[in-house]
Length: 235
View: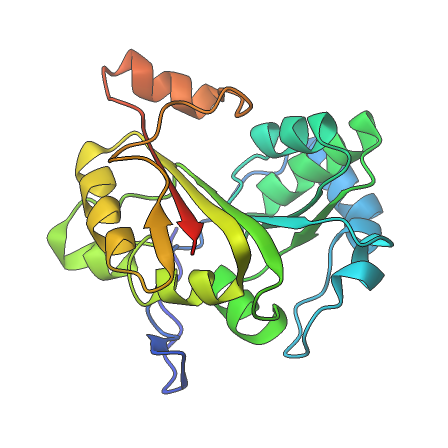
């Protein structure tokens, strides 16, 4: 069951708040996901606020911060955080079972460098994240919104990419992976005209070996879809 869009006239950084990049769906909590959500939410989830975050206060150190938008069930997020303890990771997701699943991974892997914000990512970036404070954005397999009338919902497009570019530090990167080639082509076009970003490669990026494969990605491969990657760097 899908929720209707929340309509409001507020507009910030050129982004209309009523055009969401996601649609909330009723999700089924497993017993373990619900238990983790109830027990760990307060400890590892950062409340949404219109006040800017102090990353040093959130994580207790000055390590670089990577933001992942839409981590799904969080498998890759947890593995990357476990393999890179010197980097802090902030995952943004609206799907409660996914949040619960990742909270369980945080406990199981004893991760101290991972936090979650359960809210609309564009509002989080606009209101809560300081400019030039993020070392990287990870966007793995976002909804491709295949119908033309839904293109406006795609995450990887201007002015959303302009907003992300503003939040990146110098030499920070945006890493986008999709199994829908038309979205990769669309994303390449949009990122190429995003002020402040430059393609690290001539066109598409090679597979980054540090990014673990997920079950969702394997489904795309099983369906003979091409996995395409893009990496743009803040000039």
